Length: 413
Image (cartoon, rainbow, N blue to C red; front, side):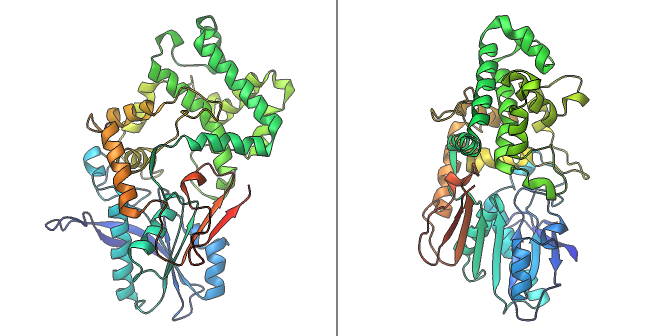
């Protein structure tokens, strides 16, 4: 069963009474009267019914405990669009605090409407949705009896250089030869970027849309960003996205990627990595590879919503610029990449949302987020944190037990 809930546009303004339809799904197939209610909080993804109907962890818990399953979509993501667009003016209403207020309002009204006020509610979520599940329990212990945050970042951080450190470490742990080949491929590309005599070769190999001699520093950074992307997403997803609908690009497992990196018939590691780039970005369908800054800005500036395939990059970037940071820079010496300093990301905040979105605004936003939610200093009880050692997000999560009421599950690999 699915429906839409009349949600407030602005929970923090006395005189605003505007409403919008927030999407949710219900699954009562396991529900036994008086049983718990599992509220699964969609983060930045488009929610789909399969999340509460296919046999995954919380669904098997629900079966065992006779729980009702409810899945709630986050404002401005998927089909829950409060204003019908994602212009900068609209995104003023996108924040984790508004989302938390959405969760509370939904929880109270639905409980009254369907007769679930006496039941115990448990918040579940994954990634940013997991952060919201944990914060729901911390901020509203009267409304949520417990919470499970899976891969949930708890600490906001502008310069999230640890991300690429973990990408590197995970790859080394998984397959050292594979890492060596990747390292060689990157070294080769960076050398070719630095030396003008290789520029024509690079343009030809990557079928770049414009000659490198016209590349600005920002253009080069976008090229490097796109170069790192397949590696990042392979380590982060390790292909577990295959079961979700609407995946935006093809990701591999680490094994599939390492098979290509070991494929000598493709030539040196540089050419093997080139093959991965071609597969991930489906370059056979593109006239040329649009690896330059104007193209990226164009894509992220689009404020209209595609009903058939709602995107999330612009919205999540807005939240990164205003409250989380989470910028995956190359500023650490403990990883092989270079070329993506914090300034590269701050520039995008300013160019996308306006000059006031500068370093100070990001810093203030990050500090305010940590002060408001508590960051790593989690208080309360009955919250379970789970993380995986290969997941590049885990440095911002809770990976060691805080107390017996705040346990962690840290999974190797």
